[in-house]
Image (cartoon, rainbow, N blue to C red; front, side, top):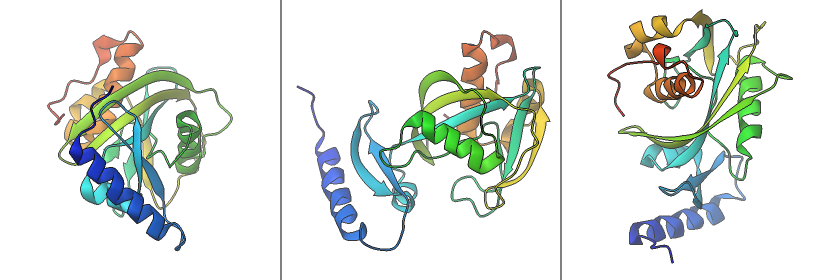
Length: 200
């Protein structure tokens, strides 16, 4: 029988209370909260998840041109997570009860206008630092645009090689760098993998 930590029981009870109180109020984004094994244990508002750095799920989509270049996006300054930094992947937080592949497709279409293209699945990974605890679903797709950017989330996009991304590591979100490096490794391109001293 799986051991459940007292802190997890407390978290579940507290978040369930918040859920009951707020589910009838104005629209808020709800997300699944997961344990260290990626099992759903509760639900939370997105804002509470960020404020308390709760473990959650997110998608990471490597959008590439099929010829060695990665589509990089600049995050807006109003983002609740790493505002203004570069992202090596598209993607975002998986909503409550949302299928992770459908979440990836939704995020790619919302952020970049990418739709109707095949998505390759590359498994999951875990990332944790002082700002984030996330189970990531890793995907990729080929697209050459044109791109329709979501103004509230993406300022601009550009094409960079893995080498160019490595040279600018400090400008990128660390979780997206991990996702990209894993994608390169899992596609037998470890010679191009990102080698940064970003926090894990």
